[in-house]
Image (tube, rainbow, N blue to C red; front, top):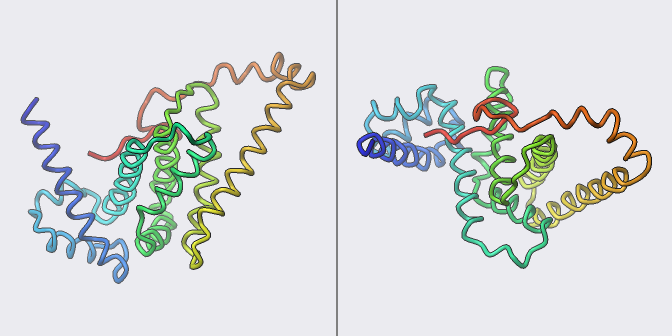
Length: 231
């Protein structure tokens, strides 16, 4: 057990070293074999160990960079005192932190990379992973259909904020995030009013009962379920 843990830690350190070395090459060569080879050389990681870390080559390198950003965001959120913040402010803070931890050119190249048909599925998982990571950093405990709706809504909000951030040269991203969160909160208030209305209560007691059977997935690696960080 101790040996396996040591091996996993060694592999994780190797992955991080290669990912960090790759960022400076991505702006020139994208998420490619050329970038991966240069990053391995710069990091000094053994080629065999690098193969274990990124078995699918550039695809796993790009995903590793994305998931590392999610992990760093969770760590940064855990270190903050959020007790004085409203819930909407906590969500906005998590999105802002996630973007601040990313390199724009690496993300821009990543969007083009994951837009390729063969990579689109992994790109979708990466976006869902970020939404899940944000909700987990906020202590979300929902296990019913709200588990899905929260992550679907946040995925859409995060995507919009990401696109704005990529083109933001005036430092207005935080204000944009606040506006998007405000829109979502307004929608949630409208939903709450509907649920408490006579029509909403009637719906909940009839067709709405089908949602009682929807639960968060048990399998950790099934879309749209939770996706574990790669080891």
